[in-house]
Length: 274
Image 1 (cartoon, rainbow, N blue to C red):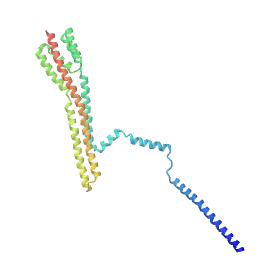
Image 2 (image 1 turned 60 degrees about the horizontal axis):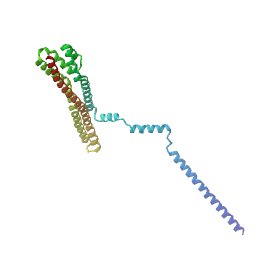
Image 3 (image 1 turned 135 degrees about the vertical axis):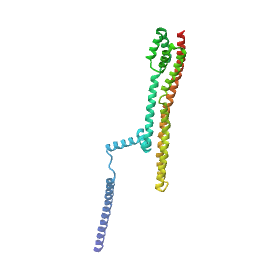
Image 4 (image 1 turned 90 degrees about the horizontal axis):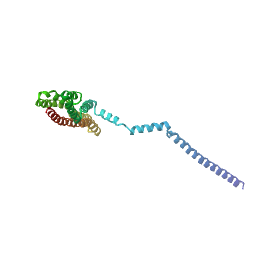
């Protein structure tokens, strides 16, 4: 009986110890998980500060709002400074000539109807000398043509007519000054671009030969750089062509006005002489 009691006591103690061990293991597992979580938390990146957030937003804004000037400058440098600088020089000189012609033509424009009316009134009130003073003090090629005709009024109407025609040709030459240079830059800009393209293609093929293999990267980069010169050359030609056409149309209008006003001026002189 005593042995049975001792046995049951030992069994109970063993079972109690095992339960405590199991409970201890169960308590150890959450601690392990907590420690693992702590390690995960420690390994995770720290939360960004407001300054970091503002910096990231600024970088994204810069990437999204890249200026057209920056892109154009980057493409210009990729095309090769040698040929691209020459093309840019053509654009600058061509635009300078175009602006000079536009300013000159606008300053040379004259209200022909008003000028003819004033000349006729001056002839009636003060004679030829008053009309000459009026034309001398009026800007523009038409007033200069009228002055040449009045200056030879005493020599006869045939001489006046020849004077008007010859001096009108001189005025037309002044109006068309520098147009040949503008057309020159319009023609040479794409030619320089094509030349740069050919040289760039030769360089691309040299790179392929040096690599010993046709790599898409080598071919694409070489062709891109080669074609950029052509693109910029065509852009320069298009810009200058627009200004050139405007200048030519302006000159044509002024020449037509000169011819019409000269005919009316001759009629006024004939009427005044009678």
